[in-house]
Amino acid sequence: MNALDVTQNSILRELRVDNNNLTVLDVTQNPLLYRLDASNNQLPSIDLTQNTVLEYLNLSNNVIPTLDVTQNVALRSINISFNLFTGSGLDLTQNLDLSSLDISHNQIASLNITQNADLTSFNLSFNIFPGNDILNQFATLTANRGRLLGRLIANNNLLSGPIPDFYGLYDPTIQTRRFELFINENRFHFGDFESQHLGLVNLTTTMSIGPSPDVVIRNYWYAPQDKVNNIENFNRNAGDNITLTTTVRGAQNHYVWFKDGIAIPGLQTRQT
Image (cartoon, rainbow, N blue to C red; front, top):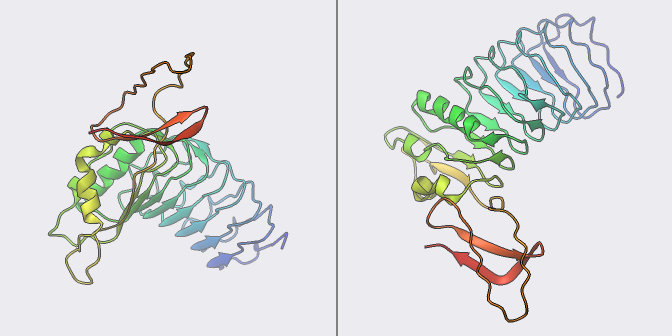
């Protein structure tokens, strides 16, 4: 389907037009719309300013670079994955009921989620977030709720620096089930989360209290991480000794050594 006109459907409540070839979708005449799934199309933009009761929005797999959701104060779920968002992504300061957010596979470098107190499911993977600010924001929201809950999928970014103490947010007297944490494929050193690592690993086999007990942490992915230090070039003769050094944070790192961009077979180092 290449085109659809719903401008005369003023009492439309739910619209699913996913997996088509739409390049235009006008929903400005649908003020009662509460669910919209327009994923897997070719939309370059969409105006949602008139959809003030919208609760569920899926625009994944389009070609959208910007989106105004400041008028959509009832939104609970947003999926804008696989689009063209850059910079600070989108303004979420008015979406106070937001609990699920997927912004994966864009080029977003920063985002303000400080007003999204109910946010428990957050996928920011495959973007270009640097540092650890976005992790600290999510950890603060979690701490304010007083319960380790939901999922944080933050793999494949440019994240670095100390990771918030998610293990310290676990309270065994409160039911905590199936939390997920993905921080692999970033620029962390083991020292950035070494103090809580064993605790998080143990929670993957720790059962929560009832009712319906389950593992406290369902997924915890922390490795691999990006290369450390700069590439070095050496001019040595055959038989000469060479000393290779690296500087990282932490005391129990594991290294794979590379030559000409290829891992040296059997040469791995464990720091103890």
